[in-house]
Amino acid sequence: MSLPADFVPDTEYVCVPGREAAFREEQDRWLDLQELQRLRADAETVTKARAQVAVELGVPEAEVEDERVDALVVDQARQPYVDFYA
Image (cartoon, rainbow, N blue to C red; front, top):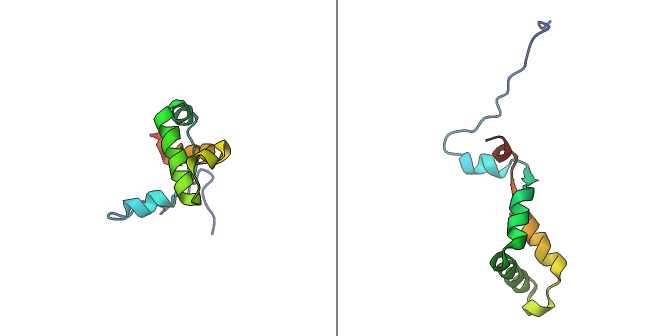
């Protein structure tokens, strides 16, 4: 079997109707630096993140390390990679 020099393979990696949520869930998530900057500057977001981490760890909010809060905020700033090409 031989292929033409200008052959470009296609893909069947497409979204199946009715499975959009599963399709997006499987995509890599990239860090949106602009969104991260916005979230870090938003006191309400940081406060909610600290409260969420405190509940998950079962400790008072005052005992939650800033690094754990920031890790949650960073995770919130991740977007499916296709969003960067929209």
